[in-house]
Length: 252
Length: 185
Image 1: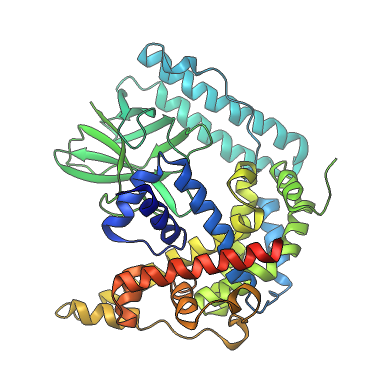
Image 2: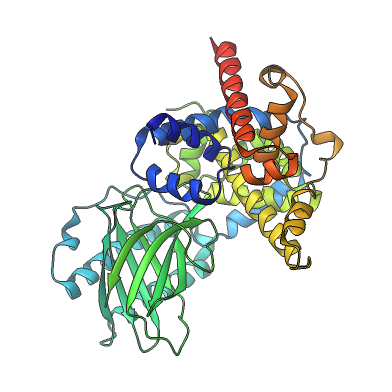
C-alpha cells in the first residue's frame, strides 16, 4: 500500500466514515504518522464548513444559566498543569517507583486544591470530595497485598509503558501510563484484565500531551484469575470486547 | 495581553477557571453548536442536552486544548459531532436489537434506511463552498458527517459500490478544499 492510499483513508477517517478492517489498519498506521495526522486535522478543518452552512438556531436563554450554575458547582476547576518533572520515577525500584508516580499525581492535585481554595471559597464541600479520593489512593498504596505489573509498549507505541498496581484480593487497581500517543475525542484507551484468554473490560482513559494517565480500575468480577493486562485503542465510551490495536501489555 | 474576544484567549482564560470567559465563548458559539446538534440528532430536547454536555466538556478540557491540533471551531465541532454520533450509533444498535435476528441484512437495511430528514430550519443552505459540489458528492458527505453513516452503510443505503462512495467522498472533500482555499486567497 503506498502512502497516498493512507492519505486517502485519512480523509474518510476524518469524515467519520471509515469502518471495518480499513479502520483498524488506519488507526495503527495513524499512531506513528505525522503526515496522516496532518491530513486528518486539515480535513476536519475543511469539514467545519458543513455545520457553518446550517441555518443557525439560537438555543433557549435558560441553557446558559443552567451551564453557569453547573460550572459553579463543578468539583474540579480546569487546571493548566505545570511542566512535567524529570521521568525519574520510571527508573527506580518497583514499589518506591509506583509510590513516587502517585506522589507526583497527588502533588498536582494538591496544587489544584490550593488554587481552588484561593479562588472558590464557597466550594469547601467539593474539595472534601476530592480529598476523599486522594485518601483512597494513599490507602491503596499502603495495602501490602498490592502487586506491581509492568506494561510494555507494543508496535503502535513502542516508547510507551505503564505500571499497574493490582490488588488481586479486592480485585481493584490503579494504572499509570506514560508515552502513549494522544488520541482524538472519538477514541478512548481501554484497559483489559485478561483471565486465561478472556479479556474483561477494566476502564477507559485518555492521556495528556506526555501520554500520561491515571486510571482507577473498577472492581473486576470475581471467579476469574487475571494474569495479564493490556491496553487497546477503542471507540469513545469503550466496547465490551477489544477491537482495536493493542498498545500496552504486561503479565503478573 | 490578548484580545478579550479571541477564542483562543477565551479558552486560555477558561483553563484558569474564568467563568466570564466561558460565558463569552458560549455566546459566540452556542448557535453553531445548537444548530449542528439539532441537525445531527433531529430532536430538540436531545440537542439541548448535547449542547450542555459539549460546553461542559469544553470547560473541563480547556487546559488541554492545543491550537496546533486544530482551530477552536474545529475542536468544538469535533466534540459535538463525536458525542452525537456515539449517541446515534448506540441508538441504532439498540433499535437493531429489537428487529428479528433471522434477517440481519434486512435489519441493517432497515436501520440504515431510518435516517430521517432534518427539521426544516436546520437544512444545509446551499451556498459558498457547498454550491460547488455535485448533488451526489454533497449527499455522501452529509450521510457520513451529519448522519453518522460509515462508508459501508452509505454504499448499502444508496445501492452503490463501496468504491464509488469513496471516490465521491474524496472528490467532494477535494472540491470543498479548493473552494475554501479560493475564498481565502
